Length: 122
Image (cartoon, rainbow, N blue to C red; front, side, top):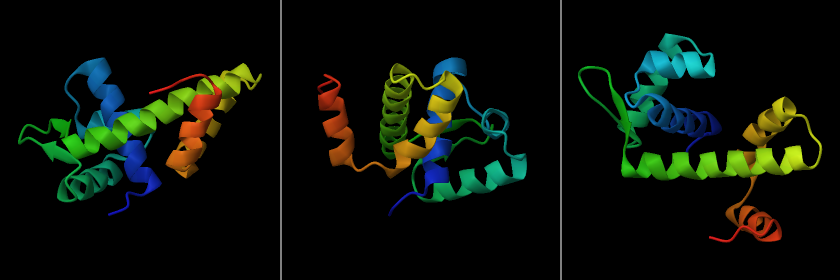
């Protein structure tokens, strides 16, 4: 199943929040992304059903192995693209916003070639 851009954004946000706070709840995701709590609750339900996250009765959200893999991929892409764009002279705010859109559109082949061009090898 292919995950939509919004799903990838949610997973990336959960990963970042886990790194910052440890425990993540829907309200944390809503605040980070600027979405309404009902929208986030609906998204969390879909991500849980599709096997990307687990939710405890307490409301704590954790990434499954599958969800963490997607989140780490998006986070790596976002950081690399943001750094590349700022290195080209793009302002940090614009670079971060452009990277957020670009990270979803690049093929794995293109991203790997970009990493190689930048001297970043796996």
